[in-house]
Image (cartoon, rainbow, N blue to C red; front, top):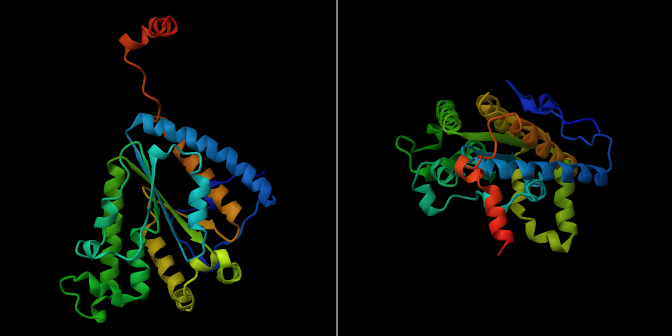
Length: 292
C-alpha cells in the first residue's frame, strides 16, 4: 500500500473543515488495513519501550471528535501492543464539583504523563472551547470573576482561552512533552449511520442517549467551533492532524503510522547504556548465573 504521508493530515496553518476529507481506505479491504495496523503498532510498541527506558520525554496524545467518531475503539486498537506500565488513558467527562472549583486546565494538568510515559486523552482540554462554546451558559458554572451573564462570554473571552491553551501546550513541550492532537473528522452522514446501528444492536443500546440527537442538531455550530479552535491552536510545537474517520480501520492505521513516523524523528531517544564498570562484567555475571 501507499505509505501514510504526514503532509496529507498535518494541519500546518489552517483547515476548511467543509472541504476536508472524511474517508480514506487506501484501496485496501478492512482485513488488509488491520494487518497493516498490526505491523505498525508492534513497531510503535517497541518504540514505546525505548521511550520508557530513555525516560526524558513524555508523549501526550489527544483525540477530539464528534460522538461516534471512533475514539474509544481507535485507542484500544492502536495502543494494543503497548506495555501497560508505559501508557495511561484518561476520558474526560462533565467536570466534577472538585474540578469545577479549579481552573479549567487543572484536571488536565494532574493527568499529564510522567517522563517516559504516554498519556492518551479521550476528549481533552479542547472541550473547554468546543462544548462550552456551543453551550456558552456552561461557562457560568465555572464561577469566573467578571463573567456573570452569557453576554460576558464573548469573542475576547474565547481568544483569551485559546491563548491560555497555546501557552499551556508550549510550556509542556519546552519541558519535554511531545504533543499530538488528532481531530477525528467524521461526516454527518456516517454519524447518522453509526447512531442507527447503536439503536439496531441491543448490545450497543447502552451507548445511545437522546442527548446525542440534540447535539447532532447543532452539527454546524460544532464544525464552526472545531475549525476556529484548530486554526487558532495548530502550532509547530503542537500541531493538529485531521484524520478521516468514516472508515475506522483506515483511521486507526493513519494515527498509528503518524505517531510512529513522527516519534522516529527523535534520534536522541535511545535506550540508556549500562555503566562501563557493569558492562565490562557482563560475561562474569552471565557465568555466575549459569553456574548456579
